[in-house]
Image 1 (cartoon, rainbow, N blue to C red):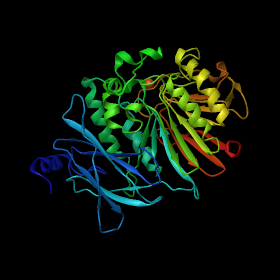
Image 2: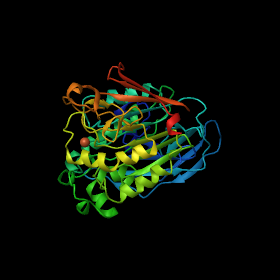
Image 3: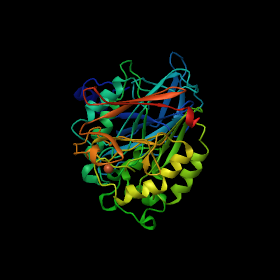
Image 4: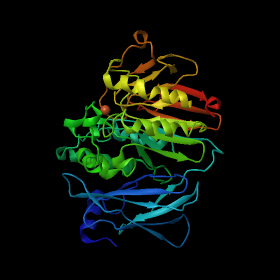
Length: 408
Ligand SMILES: [Fe+2]
């Protein structure tokens, strides 16, 4: 039942898609491990806080219960962030769930264990409370994706309490818009970007001056670490889906150095997944810029340290962001165009105001650029993947098709 406070909020807010009966409750989904058998339900709300999530297979009578994590207060707000991980789920199955005292019953679907039919997901970056953010989230949902990836600079909060309103607007927009036409909430996988970290610490290149412990990472990225249990305060990680997809979520010098302990982890992680057909790194600052200079120190470092590992593992596609314009490179190997090289795709323009990209005719690594808000609709099949880059009106900006037999 709704208390009087929640009831007033409910009446003021009116009906919304996946927001519950309590208007101050914003619910979103992610994963911390196996997306075929788990789901992490996250929420942000004002006090008193939901203590648990109840869940059941769609149509079942009995609810199971998962306890919530310790709530984390959100800097500069009266809200808390909490989550509960549901485990022991069946692959490719619809479940119903509800948070705490909220009456709203929501739905999600676990990912399939095998790639028996095409699997679609949507990828983009840099919503940043920008003018196109909600429209792009609705466009993402309209593709009926199994999940959405957002590659950093989520809320443009800069780790500062004065920008907490941007955080609230982002999570409200996600809760309302990342819902399919059939009412299924769409899980979100994120990586960290520079604007998710305190403004004074966004461009530390010396790895010894980057945070060395959990408390410092939480202090530097208070909204990001409180809101996203994966990759959370660690800043990087991998999600394996069956044996057909691995999302390698990386940190481009925001909470972890590109060439610090993350580098050895990346080497081992990629080497262990050479046989995965769709081995896809996701990170914020580009190795191959489409707006900034190729000699940018951080981009150079990523090309020198990560790109050789991508090539050794047979990675054919990475997702890049941060630049607020679309770009796609030629397949690159050893810094040169190569038919069996790696394509570096995207520039992070899922909402934020746009920048002018470089002219591909003057940049040997660039195949195409566009000053356009965009996201990528990615369709995975056993032997190939198709990536359609869509503009804000849903029109196609770029089409990429890759066979994946070489990587298998
Ligand atoms: Fe950025």
